Image (cartoon, rainbow, N blue to C red):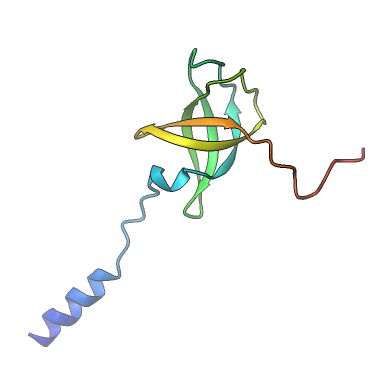
Amino acid sequence: FGVAYLLHVFYGFASDGTAHIEHALGQPGHVYLTIPGHHAGKGKVTVVVQGRTMEYEAVTDGEPLPTGTPILVVDAPAPDLVHVLRDETPSPQGPSHV
C-alpha cells in the first residue's frame, strides 16, 4: 500500500509538457508572417509561452502587421489561433541611435 501511495504522489508532480494557448494571453511576441488587416486573412506570430517559443496563426482588427512587428496577444478564439494587436509598449532599450 505504501509503495502505491508514493507512486501516486510522484505521478502528481508530473507535467504533460504541453504549452497551453491560454497562457499566451497578454504575452508579447513578433509577427513571423505578415498578418493581413481587418480579419482579411491569417498570418503567423511567435510568442514565448511557458518558457517555449510557440508559433500560432494570427488575425488582427487593425491595419496589416508586417513581419517583425511587435505584437500583444489579446484573445485565443481557437486552439491554434490568436487575435493580436500591435504592441505600442516602448522598447526597454529605448530608441536606437544608428
